[in-house]
Length: 304
Image (cartoon, rainbow, N blue to C red; front, side):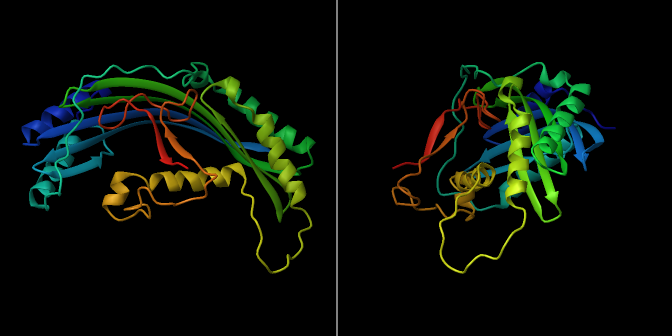
């Protein structure tokens, strides 16, 4: 029999179990997310789906050893099995060079402005209206057909640690991704997203998609040579997100980062400054605490 608890009880039970198993310190988080997705193709709505995910994650330390895992099943039995496996793996692993300790709480978390809009989770038939508006705008701008997805989300995040940190945060999101076609070989993509409806502009995304599709019509072969490339916002955002992930201590520790050992060295153009701002007002996925229960902040990754 599977025992499923609410998120507050999951993090509390995870900390209790970790200490009972002999861990020195325990941090537990639970992310609960409710999503709705509408998909359209060839100018027609084809499907609408919804999900409700509850995903616990645990982090244990013991005698300079560390282990962490996400748990696909939010039930008590699955949580206990995963934590027992983590503890066994820690007991036979090589200790790290330094002692890792959780930040000592409790902490006071300041709310981040503009990351939640209570209207977004209530949208159902309105999603169809948004998608149809985007399709019609793309057609008016010269596209022949459009396809894409419209996704809304409402998330809650809970954290509790054996070091005294405990918190809860909540946010919403809405995102439209649309690809417009002029013909089979000429297409363009547009994206709009936000945490509030007033920050979301599906008409802009549709216009951008149709404009790019029209520009891509009748392609010709280019000359060989060396050229300056200008990346669009979507491509550049993905690229910089990957760069930022390489600054993670975890990725550096396991050898998956090209930034390891390069603190203070030149790693990018002097024109680039890259921040990890987890407290950006209206930021997608902004949250007032991290996985260890510490207050989030704006961190400079690359600075010149």
